[in-house]
Amino acid sequence: MVMAAGSIVGAMLGGLLLGVFPDPTLIPVLAVILLVSAVKLARHD
Image 1 (cartoon, rainbow, N blue to C red):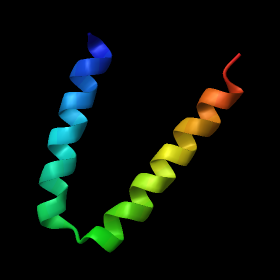
Image 2: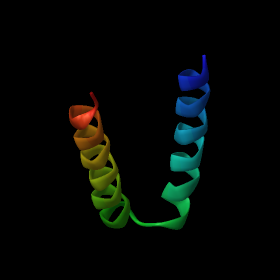
Image 3: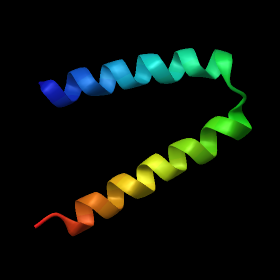
Image 4: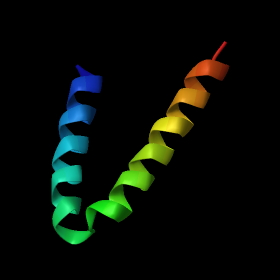
């Protein structure tokens, strides 16, 4: 349930940021966040 709440909040914030920052700025930022998350997940023991 906590993960679902985080996803909903993240989707809402992402939608709000689309109006503030242009797509060419947000896409690389989101890509970096996903890469960092993937590395953290891969290193998890």
